Every structure is written in structure tokens, then in C-alpha cells.
Length: 497
Image (cartoon, rainbow, N blue to C red):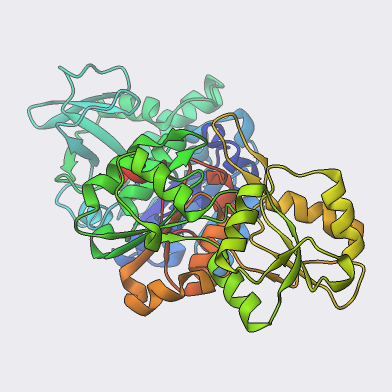
């Protein structure tokens, strides 16, 4: 038996992710969609050479991927992918490979099938069968009708009252049925010159000539991925991440729990409903406010917490200043944070004589002036002056959109001084998590955040799991560009309720 995976299309509804790769290489649960399919075929007993992938869009990427991860799997290039549809891809493939007595199996390249589905249909009792999620109705999916145990129609237009179930785009055909299908497709493509049709159009004609039985997947999990909402659903369904195994959740604040003054309701609800069985710490790089400010804000949202559960860069910063005997600094920060730092380290001299300055420290200064930048630039020209920063976030997410954060201020100073910070105390510096890591094992902790370059980097540096929420800065496209995926990707933590 040979398996044909139809994966030539652009997948425009997943744009901009599909601008950088074909849809079947988009990752779900940290693994490309097509990997789920190929691994299932191999587990069901097919050899790599029995699996034929029909690519088209970004076929070069597909070729490289298969050579690296699944050598021996055959790749065909439908170079006419932009002006054709998956019926043409299947016809193109069947025209090149003789149909043997064991028949064929067909699936679309944008589906993921849970354990046992592919093996079940290949080794099932019926040579001609369509995998069906019985008693399920999805408006955008192909539905089937049944009469006397035989599938009579397949179409998106079937009503909920008529439908026996949803086709999951997985078809097994005997050699006889496959040859009949090839003849039907040849008439559409070679005679009628219709190249933009779905395979199911020809399959419907075949149902009038051959008897197909439904293969009931018995509520096993599967998903067809058409758009970004499907992709989020797939991440939840096929990720191996289990929030139930976590005892401690370290949550970012800006962009994760709230945007500006607006709470992110799903995340707030999740925290409230889990506060008795999990310990929550709240982590922020934002040094425009103090830990007390964050406690008050979280309390205003109905979240009970205290200062001991607020993690900010001031903890490792003050530790460093004490260890290095640094008592004279030039600080770029607003008045609120300046007063807080002075209260935490009373012997600290801030913005005194520049000749005595030991370090320039950049925080998130919401009262930034040109004079501050000028003074800091001049002081940093001295070789013995340390260049320090509370954090490196480029932007701060707000309800109106992203605004400049400490990372943007650092970029100005780096340009004017040709220096980069000697030390950054906030995320992704794992020193922030020292107290938590002494209390919990790494596999009991998860970090939640909206930034890959700080939140995920922190989790990676500490060797713990990371949940990416798309409620702040980073996008699903950003996640797709990373070498390693988050444990799970969600709109917000409410998706786990």
C-alpha cells in the first residue's frame, strides 16, 4: 500500500506564518504537522518509500526537511500548485505511480490524526473506507451521509440533519477504486480542463460506482488546520504539556495578566480558580513601578498576593551593588523607582558628581529627558564606569499598543557610546528565580509570558517549561521562527480552564 499526502498549497489563511514555510511544516506541539502523519504511517507498517508527499509551495524547504528527518520518503513537486488544487496533486501523483493490489491511502497535509487512526484504517476490515468522526458536525468540513451502511455523499453543503459525521480527510481505496478514481480525475483534468477542484469532487463521483464504508474514529482526537484559531486549538489538543503537574506558576505581568490598565480576563480567572492548589509568583521587568505598586494592582483585580510573590530586577540589582561595593551611581529612572531604590539601599548616592560615579544604571524611565541621556552618555565614556540595566525589554505592551521600554533607551545609549551593558538583571537572567528554584523542583514550575526573547529565554536558561500567551508582544509567527517551541501556545491562560 502507498500513502499519498497532498501538501502543495500555500495555506494563505495561516499567513503570515505560511510566508516563511509551507503549511505542513508549521509546528503543533513543537512538531511539524506532516511529522505526525509520516510517523503514523511508519508505525502502521509502511516503508518510507511507500509514502509520497506532493509538495509545491516552498518545495525546497520540504525537500530539506524530508531528507533530514525522513530519508526515503518520496517528494513530488507540483510546480503548478498556484493554479491547481489537491485533485490535481493527487492525479499528478497517481499518474507517476502504478497502483498495486494493496490499494492506496490519501490524506491532506494540513490534518493531524491522533493515536490509532491511521493504523486503524490501514488495517481495518474495509478496503474502501472514509475515516469519519461520527455524530460530529463542523460547518467548514466535508460531511458524509450514510444509507444502508454505505456512504452516499461527501460535501461541505450537507446539513447537520443529514450528516452522519465529518470526514477527517483520510481515505483508503482498493486498487479497483483507486483506478476508477484516476479515470474520473483524468476526465476532469484532461478533458474538462478543470484543475482547481477538490479531490472530494471526484470522490463523490466514485461513490456512485463503488461502495465505501465509514471508518469510525471513535472520538479519537484529530484536527484540520485552516487558520490561526485552528492552530491554537491544535496546540492545546496535541501538546504534551500538563498544567496539572505544575505546583508553581511564575507569571509575567505586562501583556500576560493585564494590558496597561485593562485586566486580561481569561488569565485573571485562571489565577483565581487555581490559587488554592498552585503557588503563583508574579514576575516583571518593568522598573517604572515598585513591588508594592504591583501588589496593589493585582489586589484590585481580585488576586490575593503579597510582596514576597513579586519578582523584579531590583532583587539581583541590589545584591550586585552590595557585593561590588557600588554606592555611587547615575540612574536613568523615574522618581518613583529612584525613591524605591534609595529606600532599599540607603547608602546609595544617586546622580551625584560624575567624577565619583561607579556605574550608570538604566531602568524603565517614564520621565526620560534628553539631559539624562546626555549625562549618561558622557559618564559611560569613562572606562572604569560599569554599564548596568534593570532589563532589556524593547517595548512595553499597553491597551493602545506597544510603547518604548528600557531596551529602547539602551539602544540609544549603545549607539551614542558604542557600549553594551555589562550586566542586565531582569529577564532572561535566571538569578531572578533563585528563591523559587530553591523551593521547587524544575519540573514542578512553569513560566508564563508574552515575550520570547525575555520570558522564554528565562525559562530556557533555568531549564523549566514555558507557556507563550499571545495577549502581549510576541506573535505565533515569532514562535514559529524560534528553534525550540514553547511547551504550549495560548491566547491567554484562560484557555486552560
